[in-house]
Length: 113
Length: 109
Image (tube, chains in turn red, cyan):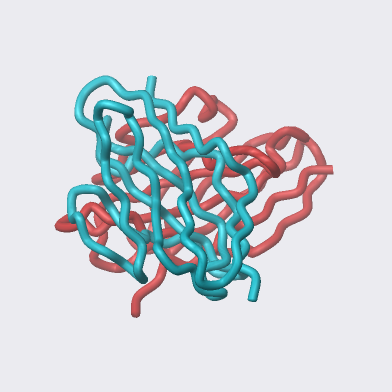
């Protein structure tokens, strides 16, 4: 069964460093998403991406964040200058258009020191 | 703004007992409601959605618009049902979901 895959599973970085989280969505899906979950808090929507552009973003998704799909397979989330409060589990997801079911990756845990 | 509330962080039952995970929502318009589940060391996955009105793994959920609730129920819990359960609302835009806090269900033997 096809799955959304994410790398790395865990990344530790110093505050102020750039981080790139990678995702390979399911191949015939067209809509892609990033969500995050800070420890002990809710899963929150960050951004949706369709047809090579952002279709919607939350207020969390400020100028420090960016997404792209440079090669038609990897869907990346970049945090330009990480802050302590960026420490969270980041989930990538893609949607099967005909059912609307969101398929999630296993998540990338980011720890900012 | 959409809001989803799951009042119980933890819920423990014994095997064979009925289980109900509560969910209330506030929403303007017609919500799409889902239950997602995350088993230990597995990814988030869809359990069921209100529009399909189906029973998955013995679980059902009925949308009650008057009470703005979407409680998840199972008449006889099994140990393998132990997991984190999220009540989720969608519908404002495609794939943009609003999650509840989640309820950890533990089914004891």
